Image (cartoon, rainbow, N blue to C red; front, side):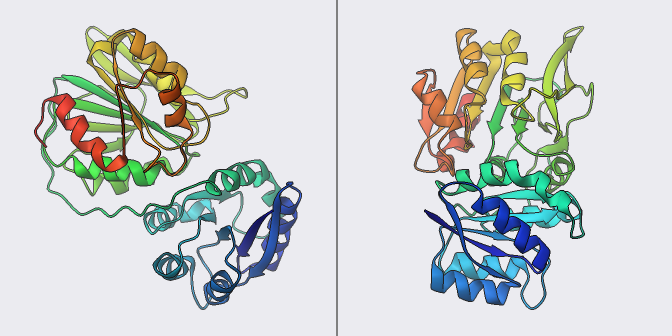
Length: 338
């Protein structure tokens, strides 16, 4: 039985979260707390397997809670926050939170029940996670290059924002490549994610828009709630934003991105990072068969060793390497010394 601690200043939210979690076999809420001070005391005393935490609370907010928790006794933590806090969510991820679940409203409402499927999925993923904290620093921008020598396609899910931040911030020089990223994320968060990444790299990072010319030195983040693909017009590659449908399990889909790159596989490097499930495996197989190079993150650094494990098990990975070695191998593949 896995023990869960809920921290939220709303009694209603605590009640609904408890009910949703305890309906799932194998999960038990051992206690709740109304703020970070109370939550920290209970976390250190009860040693839960996982914590859910709100960010905006009296006495001690979620940020201070995460800072103290990760310094004293790291425990997998999921942020449960409303949409208006998207900027704050990424601050929390950088401070050590494993993942986040978006509240449907900012006020107490039974609409909270809508997050149950997503919440339980992410709790189960976080319960088998490693905790990584990524730090980045500001770097001077360099102008993009128009001609593309290579395409780097990156796919990830739980733990992905931290991993992607580490990779992108480690590419400190100009590159003859464009980077396209499919990170499982809801609508409303990827724009903020792109803006935060853009502050820590010489590359130009944006949330992808429909029919943008794809240029070297630029990073395109698939918009939350949609898919990013690539299409060609008169020899120029452009972004192609595709709507999700009801049957889609993963959005944005790594497979959709990878499969759209099959015609350009010989100049494509596909990287599969942390995440639960197998999104990216089928696309990576097709890319490999067409001549692409495939990297998979290794178990020792992956927050969730699901997606990269599926690629490794398929026998198609040219390299299976920890996160801290991936930027150097990417640069080597692009012909850069770093």
